Length: 94
Length: 191
Image 1 (tube, each protein chain N blue to C red):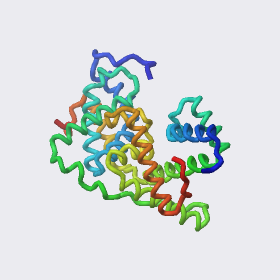
Image 2: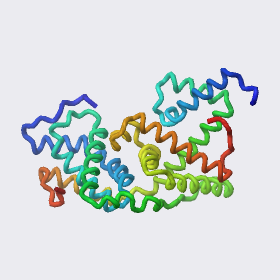
Image 3: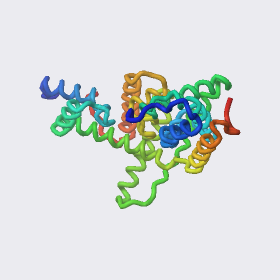
Image 4: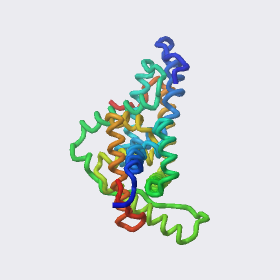
């Protein structure tokens, strides 16, 4: 085992538990501040956070080119026809 | 938000249309992204959103104006479930391992080496995503690709927020493990 103190270990575990929520912007202010402070001082957790940030970025990038503008245009037109016809679109399903 | 009262039932046509325009139309792109995650086939995704829009229009008079995205995602989820009931059960599992995403990055100022490493990283992440069990993959797609909050993803899938969190955590850990195996991120023992 390394010389990591028990306190440090607890901080790392606590950070690890809250890390995903923190990275997703879903952690409360207090937790976010605690995690941010720990990531600054702990290289191990900082690297882990960096990896997860990169994963999120890669996932976001993988989907960014997939927006089908034509499909969106069709759906907006359909939406417009709904409001124009009072909900009686020809394509009204079931 | 709740700054405006619910659309009243009198003068239905114009009031409904106004409420629909206010609450629903801005969310069409999100609905389509989520639908694409749920069904994968573009034509099915469009059909699903169309069904959702029709149902939303019919229900708009009863909507109180609070959290329109969550309301619409619930309608989308119920509509999806109803549609699946009318189809062959096996349809749900078809093409789960097909990866239709294409990495198509434009030119950028990074060094050639960085571009290659980033492309490798992204390729491993995309492969790892495709290899995840469906229930995990869908959550990752909703949150990381489609940009939904935990609560919105929970609404879309009809599962508790805590389940979204735990699936997300496990899914990302698996993706990270793949990256470690590919030598793209350092291996570390803790967690």
